Image (cartoon, rainbow, N blue to C red; front, side):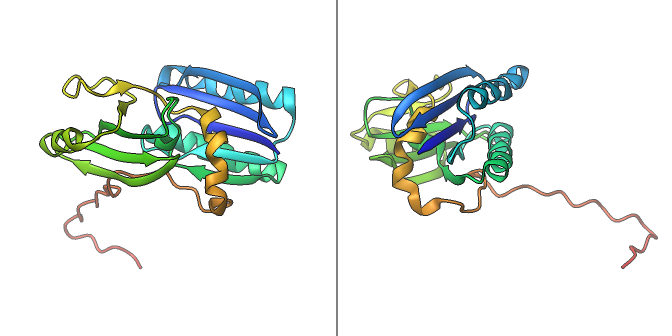
Length: 206
């Protein structure tokens, strides 16, 4: 199976190509707004070398909303062109670490943090929002490693680690039931929609 994996949910993006389990291409690059072109450059380079994929794996976050949306849009476009199978996997399940059981924490803004627990490549708890006090209690009760994909000085126990496209490809077999399922970023909160105030004396048309 020719597999292309895309992961752009954190500040370190990656792309991987696997054929029947053999690692033929791995690229890592800065994935912030200043380096967004690196993602497309690496995708183009990979496809020029190996042709059309038969399977595409994409990381769904949680993480950078823009990055995940770009990866999903690219995966959908390539799926249409290559008639490939498409699978979405939570990015937190694919950290580039040696242990299969761990938890991931991250800054969710608004004085809150997210928590997720991964066991054997599967998301078994979360992502859930917690206050700093709640997260501190949760971490103290854990007996497994704690990772984050950004610096969190208030939680020094968390080691820095990033999701890896190659790891997404490795665990894809665990998510075979998700093939061609609707792809959506993993949201930590419901989208906030602001409704415009009505203009006095103005009646909207129907």
